[in-house]
Image (cartoon, rainbow, N blue to C red; front, side, top):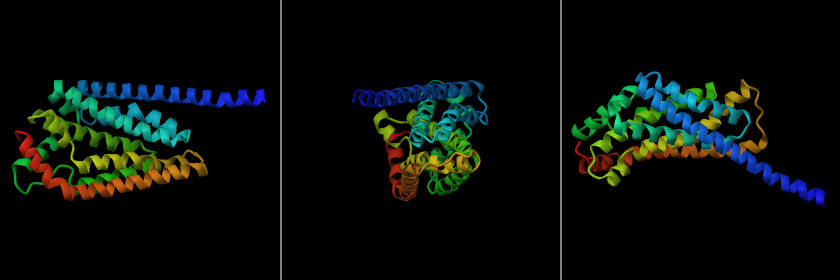
Amino acid sequence: MKKTSKTGDKQPHEASRTAALLEKRGNMMVLLTIASVVLSTIVGIGVLSPLLHTAAVFPFFYTAMKRRDHRWSVIIVFRWALALFATIVVLGVFVPGRVGTSLPLAEPVVRTIDAWVKVPGSSPPAGLPYLLWGMALFLVGSVVSGGLIGFLVGSVAVGGAAYGALFIFRHGFNIIQVALVAVPLWQLSLFVAGGFILVPASQIAYERFLNVERDPNDWPLLRNCMYIGAGFFVLSLVFRYATAGPWRSLLERWTVL
C-alpha cells in the first residue's frame, strides 16, 4: 500500500514540474517577442520585422508540436499574438514614426482608416478580400510549412492591426471609448480564428514530413480547434457586414479623424 501511495504522489509532483517548465518557456517566449519588436523598431526595415517576430516564437511552437502538446501550442500562439500587439502599441506611443517604418502594413492601414472615415464610399480596413485571401494564405502556408508561414503572415496582420489601433488612440477623445473601437470586431474575430486554426493546420506537416504520429487522444482537441476557428472565421464575415457602419460612426464621434 505504501508503494502505491508513493507512486501516486509522484504523478501530481511530476505534473507540477512540467507545468512550471512550460510556464517558464512561455515567459521566455514573451520576453523574446518583446525583444524582437524592440530590435525591429531600432532597425526599421519592414521586411525584417516578420522574420524577427516569427523567430521569437517558432522554436517554442515547433518543440510543442513535436511533443504533441497541442493545448500548449494553442496557448503559445495566443500569448505571442498578445505580446506582439501590446509591445507594438506601447512602443508606438513613444516612437510612432519609427514603429511605422518597421511594420510592412503600417502606412497602408493608416491611410485606409483615414480615408474610410473621411471619404464616403471608401472601403473599410480589413475588408472582404483581406478576410478571404488572408485566411487562405494563412491556412495553406501553415499546412505546407508546419506553421512557419502562418506565423509570418500573422505577424504582418497583427502588426498592421496594432499600428491601426495606435493611430486611432492618438486621435481619440477618451481612451476607454477608443479602446472599444481600436480593432474592428471582424478583424479581431479573424485573429481568434487564426489562433485556433494554426495548430490543426500545422499538424499535417509534422505528420507527413517529420513523422510525428498522431495519438487518437489528440483528435478531439484538434477537431475542436478547427471547429472553433471556422466558427470565428464565419463570425468575422458576419461582423464585417453587420458592424462596419456602426464602427465608422463611432470613429467619427469619438475621434478627430
